Length: 400
Image (tube, rainbow, N blue to C red; front, side, top):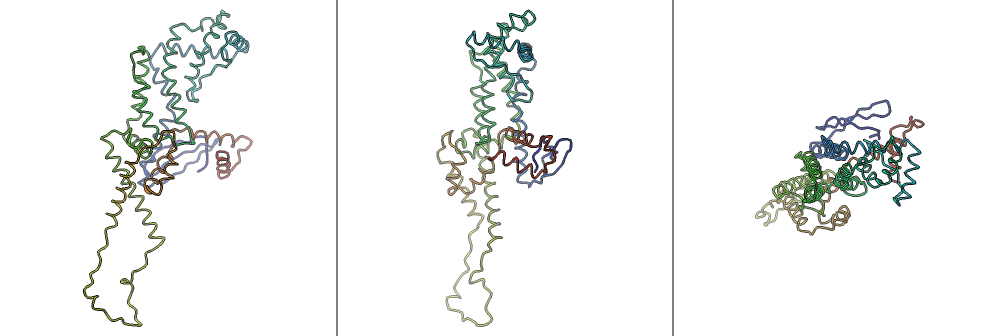
């Protein structure tokens, strides 16, 4: 598949229809999916496009219809614009920062396509509030932009509530470690600690937390998405059943067991096709050259009844799953893929499922970084590159 600037997923059924926008041209292609992979593909796209775009819609939803927050954030945008477009104001801000012993940092501009830029803008304005007040008060045309104590209280409430969420978003957007299995623990932590209301919270803080939590729970209420999150958490040796509700544990175990059987049967069929079993001595066709005389014992010999391979496979898979569940969980800082690499011999079928599910990124940030890398390669001066060449260049750019 060629790397592109924008990807639009139309449908996930037995095939995935994707429209790729490359410059001014568009290319459509269809990726065929087996029935076993439809659920995984549907869940993957749910997480990719819900979580990947979570931060900015989350902030907008949390502050929607709240006039105090609208006024305070609008005031932040106006004063940031003043310092962005005036070199005199920038110089005066730098001098005020030196006089007040504040960090000499520029203001952050909110960008709709830049994750968490709104929260970073608010945090920087609060950090430099004294210097901003000093500079804006000197000019009669900008005195109306000075933050009042009511605006400061509102911005502090928003910053305190959204700051931890930005940290979670940055952590989940990594691509060098397993992230999808963290979703269930992160949601649990948000529900029980980060977004839980306390007695010290103001009414505005409680309202922001309530709206934010309702938004998150609504986005993850889809049963298919919940099932994927449970499976990935189950296959992570750091968590296993810790964050799965007790009523869902039997279903997740049956689902994992079913997929293990499918993987095992598929490998057995591939092994039989590649290496057919030789005929036994009893099944060999009789030789026409010499006729062997039957012994007396052959009259009393009964044909051995082979054990059911299906029963043996089910018992093996059940024992492997039970052994995995009784092994102790590992530390949260350890790499689950390294653990599976070491225990691949003890859990051969589970390790294959772990590689299948734990490779899913929790957010669309890795893929969007890939789009940015391809945009730096396919420029106006290099617009005639073939898709295969772009694939190779992007691969080298991300792996060297």
